[in-house]
Amino acid sequence: MKTLLRAGALSLLLAGSALALTGERMAEIPLDKMTPAQRAVAEGIMSGPRKSLSGPFNAWLRSPELADRLQKVGEYLRFNTSLDKRLNEMAIIMSAQYWGAQYEWYAHAPLALKAGLDPAIIAALGEGKKPETMKDDEAIVWEFTTQLRRDHNVDDAIYARAVDKFGEQGVMDLIAVNGYYDVASMTLNVAHVMPPAGTEMPFKQAGK
Image (cartoon, rainbow, N blue to C red; front, side):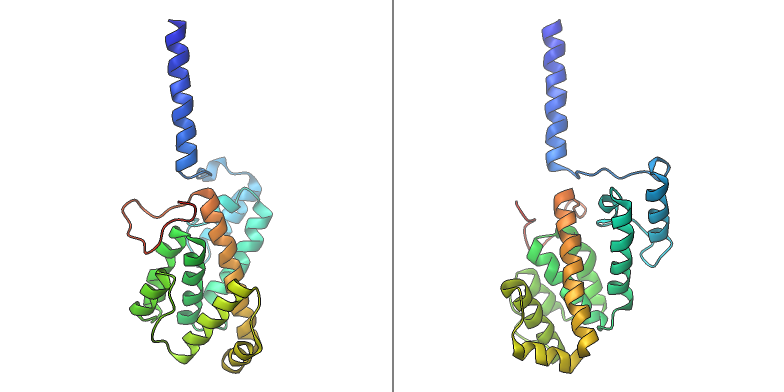
């Protein structure tokens, strides 16, 4: 009898471990289970333009002060940036594809389409390819973002084109949106935050 109980307990333990390794790693924290610091940040996010704690925010709440600082940066970069929304969302989905962050793609590819980014461009970016046809400002964003990730810098030619098109503020906002969504994508990957089951993706999840 004891042997059977031990075997059953072991089976449950292994099943739980498998779930932890394949499912979302940081379970959603109910509002009534949050610390006062977590609750304050969560309510600040939900009362803002995002309206929800979807994406990386549940994971970030494990470090409330970090969550608050990051979400404020993200709010600026998503809703108040100097860049056109079409270009901003283009940079975001490039980040998602680079990191293999499927939830980020699921959340932002529709926003890129809504902002006016050509579906053919979205499809090419999802496959990690350079789009065949882009507007001048889109080509600048693609080249700037590609060089920044590949070379950890940008050359004088694309820097000059970016400043001429977007100004120095626009260049800083382009750098920042790439960096912020790198952090968001890394968080989503580590926390195993995924889109709804059955959602079609143009790329595999990172590490799979």
